Length: 473
Ligand SMILES: *[C@@H]1O[C@H](CO)[C@@H](O)[C@H](O)[C@H]1NC(C)=O
Ligand SMILES: *[C@@H]1O[C@H](CO)[C@@H](O)[C@H](O)[C@H]1NC(C)=O
Ligand SMILES: *[C@@H]1O[C@H](CO)[C@@H](O)[C@H](O)[C@H]1NC(C)=O
Ligand SMILES: *[C@@H]1O[C@H](CO)[C@@H](O)[C@H](O)[C@H]1NC(C)=O
Ligand SMILES: *[C@@H]1O[C@H](CO)[C@@H](O)[C@H](O)[C@H]1NC(C)=O
Ligand SMILES: *[C@@H]1O[C@H](CO)[C@@H](O)[C@H](O)[C@H]1NC(C)=O
Ligand SMILES: *[C@@H]1O[C@H](CO)[C@@H](O)[C@H](O)[C@H]1NC(C)=O
Ligand SMILES: *[C@@H]1O[C@H](CO)[C@@H](O)[C@H](O)[C@H]1NC(C)=O
Ligand SMILES: *[C@@H]1O[C@H](CO)[C@@H](O)[C@H](O)[C@H]1NC(C)=O
Image 1 (cartoon, helix red, strand yellow):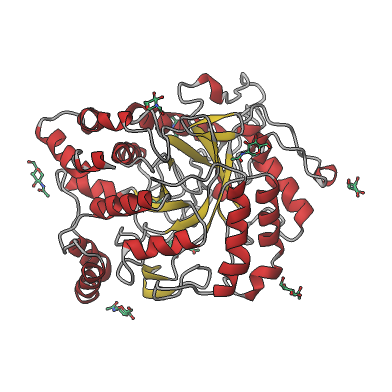
Image 2: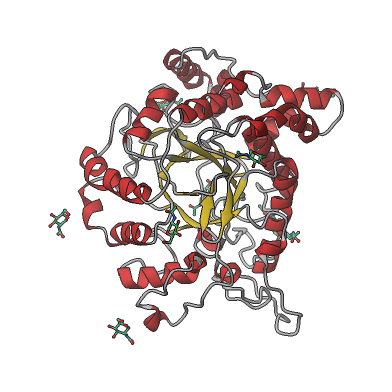
């Protein structure tokens, strides 16, 4: 861990880059290159994929079980740190037996660094901008009081550094996830964050933000992966609801390929997770090798002459980053189009949606859904969001029970939504409680202790026991 002190913080690297009118990526490459040499201890990066598995540099299959930590709200600082220190929060996460945190963020967090000519946004500015003067000042003081070493001028990426470093000490992976472009509660079809070049989703800014985070990751050995984008979906303009923005598999693959190229040029070591269409429920055209001109897509914009065009089939293996891509899928009871009321059907749907890429056997109900093609190629697929109320109903919830069975039987990595028992701001309200969260409102214990003991601990244990589970030494 000694090298952590040797490298410049990302913001400083960026400033240096701005001063010399060089690309921040070139500079960061030089600054951070020594990291590559320091990979002889946990988690033994860099990671890559091999058939259905994520493997470390020793070739061992790695499994993840964990939780989403929201950080893409208006203040763009991970929730909860005004209630408990970063270390206390990570101790809670660790105590469940989790090893993985999907840390959500907004691309706006990086946009603001560029707007400020390379300097990051200090905590107090972030809080006052997000919460107003009174609450912003108060919450800043609370954050500083809880987290030794921080001041009102601590930058957002310094908060991230602290999280990543404390997570490394605990043997936890940090997976940065672009939740939105403009910081806010996610997601719906009209929020401007839905699809490429939607009004809060400028593709250029997105690439720039991804590259910034890919560079930041180089100084944190436990940041072995990052996501491209959360829950793509049809963008709907409420005043012109029939307008189209090219919501289909072709524009999807064009944009995902370009964005993965952008990350790969900044950091060729990091794994990139690809989430699917219709709120990350669907990667079927990719995994099943369908013709992207004609593959079915719920609410998709048809390519009318698709059958006359030369077929386009996505071939992951043909890209230089072919062994760096991991697929991720979500499933909630609010799904608009999938049946979540019966486990055999859910399993058949999961297989069809993309879990076929694990090379698992087609579930029994495939004889009913009759849509379970074998995958073109084996690729890891993780379940990176799902969730429900954290109360006794979890024990009797068909979907939750089914996901638990599916992930443990097929050793699928997963992250539940979410950790955050309260949000400093969400959908216009401040101090918003969340009954779907693991922590209590005060982030100093659990919302539903019995669920932690009887649901999450045994599930995490079962998921991680088959895999390499070593911790930092
Ligand atoms: C260390 O990382 C480098 C570069 O990322 C990689 O080529 C090498 O195989 C790794 N070595 C070990 C022992 O993991
Ligand atoms: C950033 O630099 C430009 C050009 O030097 C300057 O006009 C602008 O005021 C600076 N912005 C900030 C926030 O410092
Ligand atoms: C969609 O999200 C936007 C931004 O958060 C919000 O203003 C709007 O009310 C939401 N619409 C619906 C139908 O939930
Ligand atoms: C929605 O469509 C209208 C009419 O075409 C257009 O004027 C407006 O800018 C669009 N709004 C957004 C947010 O894209
Ligand atoms: C990205 O998506 C947008 C919106 O659908 C589309 O206009 C653009 O052509 C796509 N880019 C690529 C490289 O496919
Ligand atoms: C599908 O398979 C299951 C178990 O293999 C069997 O019980 C069921 O009758 C079959 N259904 C149909 C429609 O073939
Ligand atoms: C709900 O789950 C609990 C614990 O698994 C079980 O004891 C109880 O019988 C279940 N209740 C119903 C209505 O299924
Ligand atoms: C300040 O935060 C509290 C919750 O912590 C909230 O009830 C109150 O409305 C907020 N004040 C303003 C002005 O938003
Ligand atoms: C998951 O199971 C497959 C098949 O049994 C095995 O090849 C793989 O190593 C396992 N992965 C993990 C992470 O345990």
